[in-house]
Length: 373
Image 1: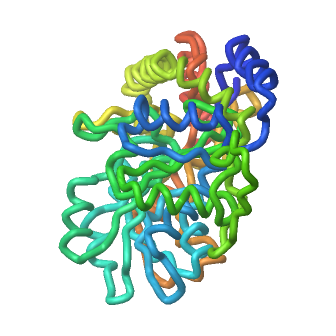
Image 2: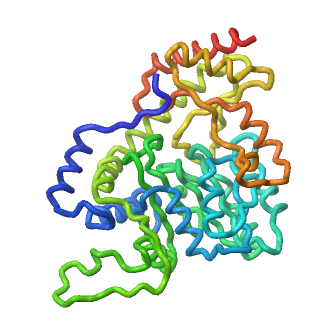
């Protein structure tokens, strides 16, 4: 049984055909424009969206336009795939990791504030597995210290925080369209913001430092762009954008199916000893990009994972305690993140799960726990 599985079919194939028929397959074309408009309005609830080659490129762009540079520090929620910390390092700034809440695993606001130094310029919060972080508290901290706030919403399409959509909760937010995410084109991403100047600067940087070619489409003269700022090739192809438009049509159903599967898991896991189901807070809607359980400290996670895989059920660790990765040489102690990094186990979660499959996963997990004793 697959750990994750995209939901794709004839609708996506038809969308690709439409892009082929348009004659514009490369990046930042008319299909990307259509995706950006819909994503901003229907998903993020922002004035602007920019389609990017992946979430890492969106993170880098966001940090660049917010002004991160060498000598700066950016506080990052520790429990995340290292792309979050990497994107800070790409700007020359230093990621400073903050410990996490033990229940929803996003940055603990108290730990964030404690990590602020005179070199701190911003806070990069992570919506871990899609559930939004504590943005009211983080905004108060940012405003109190004169910092900007950024949202790593890689897993969060369709999530909400106190009625507001993920993507609209910070100065800039970024999304992923990787194959494991709730909506996917295989790869891709997006940057969202309400700030027109940040959006325009990001759009310039994501096409080598000039306006995209479509801005010159149909001109009768011969404008020659000039390069006055170092940019990057962070464009999403129109082929991928076509797939994403079809995925946006599916999003309400995909979210409903994932939430239904999460409810099945929660009911069944309530009776399984030494396994804790993830917490979904009442003031935010969880999109359930992944389903990650917490094993009791005495459980041998490796043995449990081996048992599950031997019985045809894919699983994995949750995500990374970033501060433990050798590349960062982080000298602090973040005990909550470190502890959960050792005890988390991701089990199958996708929109195609059936109730019998969820029942089989939980029963096999229970057997695996017993066998590991």
